[in-house]
Image (tube, rainbow, N blue to C red; front, side, top):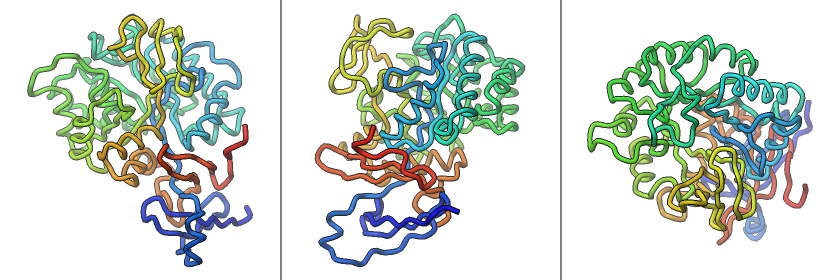
Length: 391
């Protein structure tokens, strides 16, 4: 039995002072804090921990540049705690069958060997290789390794991952795509439509077969599409589909973010889709996917040879929350929930309850000023796993 602890803080959604009691990794109670108002002004804000459904790497560590060194996976999880991320889905993208197998094996071994990895990794996101081979739709994924869905190959990867693959991004345009989706869904794997050239009919068939999400909707798409119908309109129209959005200020214009959030409501969620250069200082870097790239001081990552072409996302969920809030696209509490309780609900995580009695005690304490959110502490299962000023 863990010792109970009580936190005095300002609730992120109500802006009211509260006492949050935590015991045995769970939130036991939340009650009003009725003491001196002068004391309230000194209290931090408390909010649910962030949940990132799609992260390719961080701080120079890459889940897609094998071999994955011992300890690297757990290092990323610990580093993500300083970003307020309490649950994440390391993302393995299109590669050779052997390379994907090795990536799954490395992440699974990390979860088996290191407490940080086992606690912070809620599952693995397999993005590809069952995607569209088309330029534009394929994005930065290697054309060489794009392939049609293959259940036997997927099962071998799932075995290597010890069953930890929880999300698969694929395009339903392939023959047999709906059957593959149905098998994934029946095995407890969430299928997300992305990097697709599928027709509206194929999108509808995918949803009927069990697809439930759109991966970074509006990105990984052709530069030119039919006015209507097209696969973006169809995904917006499918009520069963949740929409993931990269709100880093570069990948999607404000009007697209606004429309998707209006249409999807509580089924709109934020992802970072961060590459390994997230958390790194500005500069020019050489990467195994995009070659020479430039990370600007504003956090924009583009190809060195053409600054108009993005080379991935290098901003984290905290930045996405600030973008939506500062641009008037969402209230702060709603933006925060798009990056925390909503993805947790989609994935049926124990932290889906947020700040409610009985929910998993995954939360952060922070202060918010003109520069944005300044994290002070991150708690996982009621334990402080990172505190400002500590390594």
